[in-house]
Length: 499
Image (cartoon, rainbow, N blue to C red):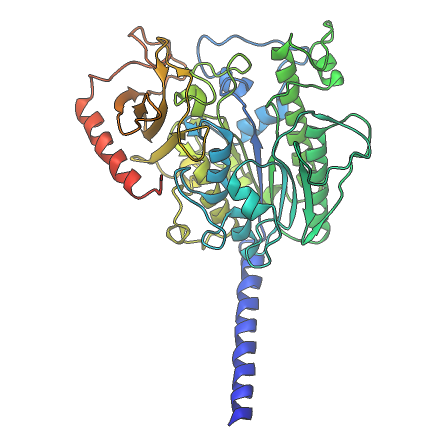
């Protein structure tokens, strides 16, 4: 009996192994009529809504920023022209929760725990893709889940990341293994590697591009589909640009690579370096024959820093609940999207960083059941393709906080100079409801502000009094809508693990 039991156990185990192998193989191959697909996600840090020429030209009243080469983002411009520009896309008002939303597909009010939640990297690995992360991390979730090697819960096969950078220009042979202050971690599989910069003054943005290009080329050689996430640190402070990039854009001016003056020009040069990276990645995909089967998503994490970035025509900056602090650049490209005759010139439906996970998974594996992901996002490709009208009734929650523990922040001001305390904002289509608490010690005492955010592309500014610059104050014009959104927000907060 014991021997029979052992034989049965072996047969059962072998059957299970074969079944798992066949499922993994099927997902890796994505069926004969759906060859292996890849995904590239590029995220910029503190990239204001008005920084990119492709966004600035959509709105009246924006100034044309001249450089010696014309637009300083030619590759992003082409990506936008061939793909779709999303004009009502949201991150969070700070870096950390935005990144959590991108990786998890969930609102920043959710709690993510190791072993209980699958992030985008592991979803991709389950579908046979090789995964890599090259760039900035900032959320506790990333420190606990994506950086370490977890045999059962591995998200990224390769990981190079840093939490904060004090210098874009690195030293040759510089040891960048984990250390205090500005740690850079490099892990391949279970091994941590002492990654060293190859040359003196190597520019970090270029290094991240080099790593990404090398990864794509290796995957092509191995005939392995891939997912690569490239969270550039640029144009986040410190504001440091390559002298050769400054010379290319502003050849008749003497601008140092660092300093307090000419930050506008240096930020443009930093974005120009990112654009160069985008161009190199696209050329590598094309050279290796992978471009036609690759989805590319380019986005920002939050609004730009006050006194540094351009968020026009939105009011507000990073850390603030206004659209200048939470609305972000968001461009999607794929070959089917480029070839679509029904795709819009731009998409003004509500989208968010939460949509990147379900959209990417559906692209890689069309059999993915979105409901099984339990994501707060959705696959936005049918709407970008013009196959379906903009999705109505979409909701997104923004949590304004600099403290993970207290969910509060002090110091923000509205257009009339009034201090804004902590804020939870609910966005539904083109309306925003903000729950404002002025006193961090009395968060149970709050008020509501309602804003209508109409599509203002190509239109003159409204002449009505403004709460959010460029937008009409409609607090009293839609009392029923405001009441309904208050009720909706309170109901949503009951189930979002805010506390």
